[in-house]
Figure 1 (tube, rainbow, N blue to C red):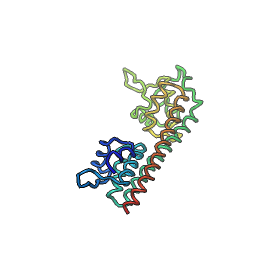
Figure 2: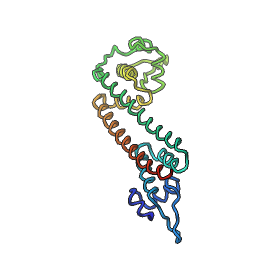
Figure 3: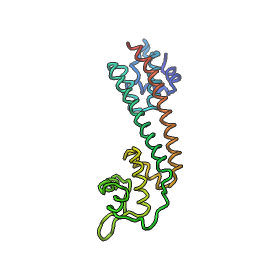
Figure 4: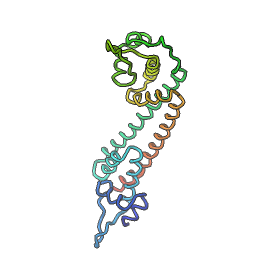
Length: 230
């Protein structure tokens, strides 16, 4: 088939099909005596596999996977697919931890802090049952950043920052890792509503499900390519 037919069936433009061939995502096309590209079903399936993988794990990893199917041993191709599945599984695990954390802190009085709650590092560490070094680590990771005494330079936690520290502690106990927590805390500070976080987590769940389905579709298309290459 000609380039335009591959483009139509794969949902790409003619130039995109040529780019995919240039990048090794599609195997080199045969040429007719007059110099036109002559594609086959393998090219369509490769393009469809790439399209699905790009939606699942991004274009860079998608190129790696589909290129490997054309030139690398089967074990290496399967290893790349295993890594893609593992990555999505890790994201699902993070999501489960996040949902558990939201459940745990759903009754945490985020806004119910008193002026007397202002604390030093040692006072807050004692109140939370953590080490002062833990609070310093949270400061370094920008999870809970206290004020500084202008004269002495020591950390001093305002009532709002005490509230943040209480939430971070619950999230950490629920298994929430530092990196995703660093992204979550600003959302909590802006909205101060657990419901907003739960809505965001539901959207994240939907996105992971969509990507998982795309990964499945890509694997099906790539399986056909691998069978043709045997």
